[in-house]
Structure formats: C-alpha cells, structure tokens
Image (tube, rainbow, N blue to C red; front, side, top):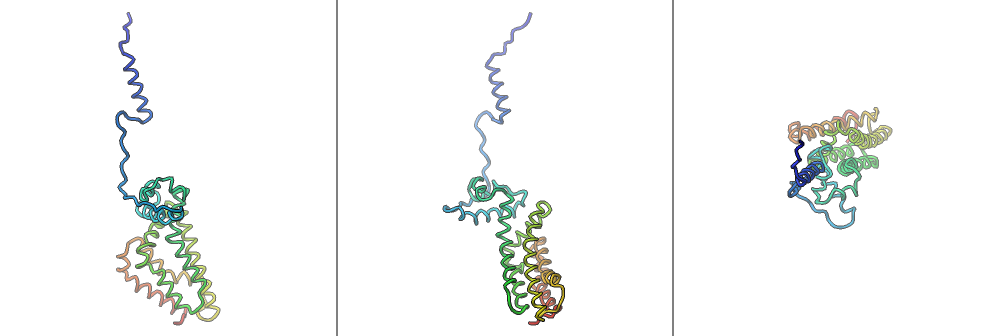
Length: 247
C-alpha cells in the first residue's frame, strides 16, 4: 500500500522561492549596502561641459599614477570626482581614451611646445642649449608633474606598449627633428663643427634622458646622490666643446 505524501504545498512554495532567490542572486531579508568608497569625492563645478575636463584629467592622472593603467577603474575615477561613471563616458569613450588625454596634457603638450620653440629659434646655439636644459631639467620642476607620468609610461610600457611607443615616437621624434634642423643650419653657417646632426641631437639629450630614467626608477634621492645638476651641466659643456660651439 502506497503512503500518501504528507509534504504540504506551503513547503514546496517556500523551497521554490528560495531556489529562485539563489538563481537570481537575491537574498532574503534586507539587502546589503554597497561598501562606501574610501576616496573623498571632489565635487565638479557646475557649468559647461568643457569646464569639467581639467578636473576629470586631474582625477584620472592621480588614479593612473596610484593604480597603474590596468588597475585604474572608471568607477574609482568617478568616485574621486563625486559623479556617476556615465558622466566620464560623456567626455571619453574608454579608459584608453582617457589615458591618452592625460598623457597629452601632462607630457605631450609641454614637449611639443619645446619642439616648436626650437624650430622658431634664430640665434647663437649655446644660449638655446642652455635654455633647453633649463626647460627640460627633470629636477625640481618635473618632480611635481611630469616625473610621475614618465614613471607611468615606463612602468606600463610592457602592458600597454602602443601607448608608450606612440608617446615616445610623437614627442621625442618632434624634439629630435627640430634640433637637427637647428644643427644643420648652424653647421652650414660655420657655428658648429660639421657632423651627423641626428647623432648630435641624440648626444645632446643623452645625459638628460639618463637622469630622467634614473629619477623615474629610483626617485629624487638618486638625482642628488648622482649630483644630477652638475652632471647635466658637465654634459652641456662637454657637448659644446666637442662640437666647437662658441659662447
């Protein structure tokens, strides 16, 4: 004789609802609140959209420097600004686009301005060379802005090689080509020993690049320990003597 199932329908309904909650990710009782961000929001100013750009780029730069490109999240950048993530996407369609905008502001624009200054220069060479070294000297001015971005480019170059390649190609090629043009003119006018202008340009900026990479990897203390300012000055004077550039 078969036994009647004594399991009531109420239990079945409860089991079905519990299974449904498990499948859909719902939980019984009060839903847990999302953890609050530990980053103190910085409220954006009201106004036209373009007024937000500097603040977005500053927040993104800070996030990229702290977390690296892959570790940075659009949600966290938005949290720094105290806005929702869709606000960021109104201005930049992706994190890649945002990183490129940050690099353009922090590194590309100043370097391109230096290249243009070289192209427009007319006059004796040594004052120009001194001006260039004063402008690109990585200490102390770059301590505040450029150096952390250089560190970001170098540290992320193996993860996001396209950005590093594009940055170095766009910027250092522009400076190198502008310097070559000045050197060619100086050689033709007899103000500089004749040589390969491309290699002369590389030789000029070699000490600067050396110091910049050392500081990027090891920090400011390395610059002082290596007597960076004296090293750069010696490199400048040695270059001028080698290429017979008069005062």
